[in-house]
Amino acid sequence: MLGNIAVQEIDKIRPILDELSRKIWETPEAGFKEFQASDNTAKVLEEAGFTVERKAGGVTTAIKASFGSGHPVIGFMGEFDSLPGLNQKATTDKDSDNPGAYGHGCGHNLMCAAHVGAVIGLKEEMIKNNLPGTIIFYACPGEELLTGKGFMARGGAFEGLDCAINFHPSKVTEVTIGTSTAVNSFRLHFKGRSSHAGSDPQNGRSALDALELTNVGINFLREHVPEDVRMHYIITEGGVAPNIVPDIASGYYYVRAFSREKVEDTFERMIKVAKGAAMMTETEVEVEFTGGCYNTMNNHVLAGVVKEAMDEVPQEEWDEKDLAFAKDIDKHNPALVESLQAKYGLPEGMHLYEGGGAITNFNSFGSTDMGDVMHIVPTAYCFTGCTSLGTPNHSWQFCACAGSSIGEKGMILGAKIMAVFGAKLLNNPKIVKEAKAEFDKAMNGRTYKCPIPKEIPAP
Ligand SMILES: [Zn+2]
Image (cartoon, rainbow, N blue to C red; front, side, top):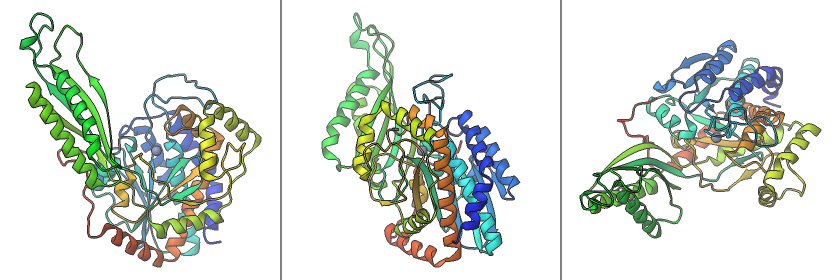
């Protein structure tokens, strides 16, 4: 099989990949502060003979590691940031030595090491099989903040790429052609005038009133937006005591939809609501743009190649320990296990996915900044089972699985699938041309425009 050399190489370097994944898991870092993860990852790739560029695209913790020359140029998009509040031991009950701290509740430790494994394996395949082309590993920071790849794109990190692949740890092994949402996130800061709420209310101008009226307005706006639009918010500051008219108040907002156009349109309307509320209350409002990304746009040609790779790479068996771990952790969420079994037609009693890969077409109202890359070059987006079926996304359970042998087995499978995918593309560049034709048709003359305003500097 084409890709066999890569698969064998990944088995050979497995201790290095497990160690890298474990190190990242043990020292979870916030988005754009992945200093240790970035350094550890860069060192592994330097030792493996890659040309490593740090601060790729002007983003401090981003890495670009290349091997080979000429076209096609394939990008392997790793991530390594973690999530606040999800610190967890690799155990089946909620437990942490540092509760509330950052933790790998999205499994990006596995994700980073899988992409590293894929390119190191593929490099071996290229050398032994004389395959032309260039492979580039990217470590993309700040995915959970949905801006890492936008900043990298703005800094030119993805220039020259022909196509890309992204693997994410999941519950099920699949390559998706479904869409996830584009998003803008922002904070509104209202400024009014403080006064005694009992004796002098007429002289107060409440920033909290403005914030509440904004939220009322946004809730009325829901009726008049396309049905895939989602708007959510929290109040982050609303005054200090009921007897003081609050002079400052702030809220944090998300708007999502299945296209950038709808997000941008609704975003403008939400800002109008806020300005209207400020006018009504004689306060001032400041908009702080915090992030934005594109919806995902998957490529059917590349998805087909990933599916072929999934069929060719055998899945390592789950052992007794893995099965017992999964069954025990799933006791926390039996409803999710049942819904997953129903969604994918899996047998009752299954807690760890097995059964090969599938091309699925489920849309998701979540968001990922992979959407940005997908609007720059044709991209494949794939997953392997790295957690139990009852593991929610962004949860302590996910963190536990990502630190266990279950996560490591899923990670190795992901690495091999991507390496075989890469070998197929390098061996037959015609596929890349077909993928590009599909991409051009889908873009329909549009070009990628970074959603993050120029005034916001890269971290
Ligand atoms: Zn993630």
